[in-house]
Image (cartoon, rainbow, N blue to C red; front, side, top):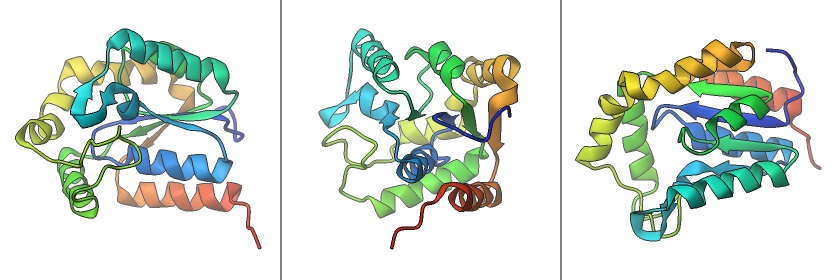
Length: 183
């Protein structure tokens, strides 16, 4: 990676890997805005947003902010622009079973609630479609080609987190480097 001073951070990876959690933590520590692409994609009550509107929201966010954290994949939402602009690209590459476990853990922690990273009234759920997405569909070549592209073109600024130990180490190191202690 080319720099230790990150002001534009893109977090991509598999569903259930912890993208939103790590994005929130980074945003809080650096005191920079975070954009959750799930919140852009989903309207209240699990209704999908219009693709053109989604692109406008992301493009405006990129134009309006000198520093940011953007959480999510969504290749149709200014993906190349996000990759190009980012100082750091974090790829959450947890195995499928760990992602499924984390999705169920998140379900139990947020039972009956909407997470901060989702649109209003998108109550946390894990259904067959989502399980299938985590275990198979999100791992198909058509989906993983976007990650491969990020590595091929921007590998010098990609950090891969593969498991809980690497996740914890990253968080500990990031906090110790950037955390400002308040008294």
